[in-house]
Structures are given as C-alpha cells and as structure tokens.
Amino acid sequence: MNGRILAVDDDRSMCELLEAGLVRAGYEVLWRTAPEEALDLIATRDLDAIVTDLQMRSMNGLELCARITANHPDLPVVVLTAFGSQETAVGAIRAGAYDFITKPIEIDAVDLVLRRAVQHRQLRQEVKRLREAAAGQVSFPGLIGKSPVMQRVRELIGRVLDSDASVLISGETGTGKEVVARELHHRGRHQSGPFVAINCAALPEPLLESELFGHARGAFTDAHTARTGLLVQASRGTIFLDEIGELALGLQPKLLRALEERTVRPIGGTSEVAFDARVIAATSLDLEAAVAQGRFREDLFFRVNVVQIALPPLRVRGSDVLLLAQHFVKQHAEQAGRPVVGLSAPAAAVLLSYSWPGNVRELKNCIERAVALAHYDQITVDDLPERIRSSNAPRVRANDDFGDLLPLEEIERRHITRVLEAVGENKTLAAQILGLDRKTLYRKLDRYAKMDLDS
Image (cartoon, rainbow, N blue to C red; front, side, top):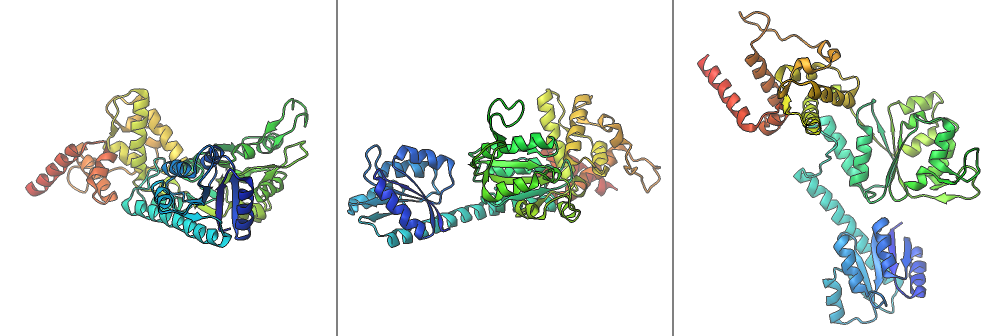
C-alpha cells in the first residue's frame, strides 16, 4: 500500500472517481462529502495525505486546509481546483497546502503528487525523531534509569512508537511491562484512542472470552444485554493483553483468528464485528519454551511477537536502583505530605546490595513504607523492611587501625564517590540520586579534597 488517503469533495461522483483511480494505483482511500465529517475522521484515523476540492458549499478547501495544517502540521494536503491562477496558488500555499492540481484531473498526476507528499511526510517524521534522539529529547517519564540496558530499551521503544506492528513485552514480574505498554500508547500514533488493558491470568476462561470478544443478548445465562468486547472497545487505540502466556489453549485459536482477520464474532452472535487496534502483549513466562511444551500455539506466538521488548530485572540495572528510589521518595513524600527528601548513605548501600526479586514493584513498595515510617528527612536503614536489612548486604570494613567499622563520614564519602563513578562524574545526577542540592554536594567534595591534601 502506497498510503492511506482521504478525499474530500461535496461531489460524490468526484470522490468515487478518485477512489477508483487511486485504489488501482495502490492506495487505501477513504472519502467524505462534508468537510466537517472529514475533520472528525482526521482526528481519529491515521492518514498519510489529504486530497480536497477547493470549491465546496459549507467550507472551502483553503479553509479546510488551514484547519488541518494547524492541528496536524505533518499531514500534507493537496488542493484540487478548476482555477489554476497565480492567486489560487498563493492562497493554497498560505493555507499550508503541500501542492495543488488543476482540473480536469488525471489520476497519474494525482498519484505522482501523492507519492511525493507521502514521502515528504515520512521524511519529516524521521528527521524529527532523529533530531529528538540526537538532542536527548525523547524522554519516557515512566522509564527511569541511565543504565545501558535501559538506554537500549528506550531506543527500541522510540523506533516502534509510530508502527502498527504487534509488540511483545517480556520480563520478570514487577519489571514495568504495563508502564512500557502505556508509554508506547501515549507517545505513539494511537495516543488519541483508548488504552484497554486485560490480564489474561486474572479471569476464568468463559469470562475472559466474553470480556475479549463480547456477547449477544441471551448468549448464556444472565446475558440480559449485549456486551461489546474489549477488542472492539480498543478500536483506534491499543489493546494490552497482559500475561498472554496464561491464555487458555481453548481461546488461543479464536484470538489468533481475531488478530489476523481484525474482526471478532461475539459469543452467540451471527455476524463479524471489525476492530482497528494496535496489539501489545506482555508475558513473564518464556513463551518459546511454552510453545515447545505445547502450552502455547506457535502461530499465535509469531502473531504477537513481531517486535519483542525484553525488560531487564532490577538486579542488573546497577545505580538505576538509586534513581528509582529517589523518584519514589519524592513521589510518596509529596503524596503523604512527609518532609522526606532522600536516602542516607547506609540505606542507599543496602538498597544497592539487595537482589530485588520483586523488581521495580518491590522497590516502590519498600520506599513507600520507608517514607511512611521515616523519623528524619532522609530514609535510614532502620526505615527499610527487615527482609532487605537482613539480606546478604556486605559489611563495610576498614583496612586500617580503626577496626572493623568505619566512621559515618567515611561511609558517606565512599558512597558519594561510588555514586559519582556510577553516573560518569555527572554531579547534577549524583546530587539527584543522593537527595542533596548541588551546592551541598560541591561543599562535601571540596572538604574531601582538602582532607586528602592534609593527609
């Protein structure tokens, strides 16, 4: 397909003529005879270019073009006109039109202009993405972390934002799979539509089938009214199938057919209902192993696993633990109205040494508890849960005459040094992790430097 085109003309025969010619040229064509209906469609559908007539009764083509380019600057508009004057050309350009074509039209000429328009739009989008990436402006507020593994995750998410390809998010429980799914939705091309999530492990098979596909009135006991399934409810948006690896074998063929045909038949229904939603699935299981064991259909695996985003466990993300912890401290302190601003050095050391089997979810719960119990403006070791305090955290030892335990200032110094090394000597980021303002961090570093000179 060369692109999805919307034709706008209050002459129905002209719309049908454009549709017939452009479909033969390899386009998907939608058309509307009222400019107001066209604006409604543009707000809900992903389009590559617009072709509009100049002279229409309720709104002329230049006004329509101006409204489209004001709200969708990357969407090219081609104006058709019977008046090929210089004045018309200037008016079209001022309204933001990509190009204009004089009537009577020739489909080959329209095809040539549209190919250039679609290519122009794709090029602008790519340049925009590259510029943002180069400037470090592609941010995902829900994905906190500077570790190389998380940088690769963000890069992959940025590459598939504007794609319709199905995405499979894999990772241990608590790594943030739904967070990634929501980032893909809210920053991608489907952001204007709904985000509909369902946990395939949370419902029994009959109820899950009804939730996904809907049911007709009287389809079963207590089906007093018809119900629209979640796949249809997610049209023009995203359907998030969490823990898809737990989907019952009996439902897998029906889901596969729905995803391939983009239609569903409600339980007890007699007709198919179309849906248009991006599919994002998530699993904490090894789906390839499940396929080999006969617990998951191979064809469904290939259907949902077009692009895979593998989320790393928290234990391999290094100093991301402290970035996340500081973020949660700020979040929960604001919510609870507590004057807690950061982590003490010993508490940070314990957090770094813990293995986090529950991943980010466990860390968030840990910090929420610590903020609620904190006696001071920084979280101490005593504020942390017992299982974390008593984990295999290494005891800090000295190699000098002061004995086994170091003075508190030396523990703090070593912790600050470790954080600085972990963030590549970025003092702003280090201060953020430590819960200090930059002036305080600089004063401590100056004092440490003087201590080294004196020694």
